[in-house]
Each structure stands twice: as C-alpha cells, then as structure tokens.
Length: 92
Image (cartoon, rainbow, N blue to C red; front, side, top):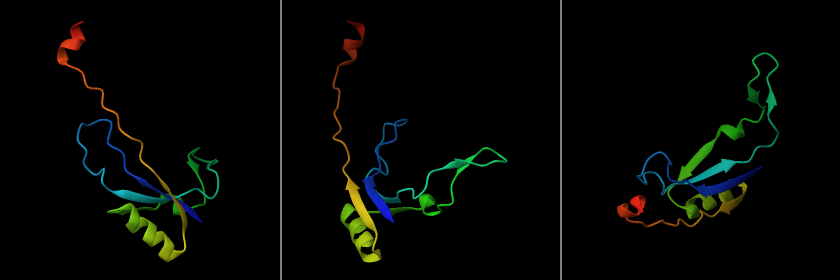
C-alpha cells in the first residue's frame, strides 16, 4: 500500500491561490483500470484510489502515514516562474 504526498497546485482557470497551501495524501493505484463490459466506463476494484486526505502541512501528512504504516513519498511542488512583462509589450 503506497501513497504520495503533494501540495495542491494553483487552479489554472483562476488567478487566485486559494487552497494551494494544503497537502494531499493520495494512494497510488494497486491495479490498472479496465473498461466495464456493459457501460464502457473505466474502473477497477481498488477503492483506495478514491480516497484523498488533506493536511495543513507535509509534516502532518508524513506523520499520519508513518502512524498508519503507509509507505509514502513526498512529491515536491515545482518552482513557479513569473513572466513579468508590461502591457505595452503586447503592441511591439
């Protein structure tokens, strides 16, 4: 039973940074998805894939995983780079 801990990224559809401070513990899939013969939807018998636990910090998530005996790895958030430019640059 493996899991990964990551920080939620900024929503690409909005400029705000709400809920980007949370850390999420998410279980990795134990089996691959297969199509349902009747409806064609992709699914599997692994119900842990539906569980997402949120924590205020990476240390809290790691402490929870250690306490429950869950093997986990922390995925660091990529560094954000800002492209600073003036409005006048659009008309050059």
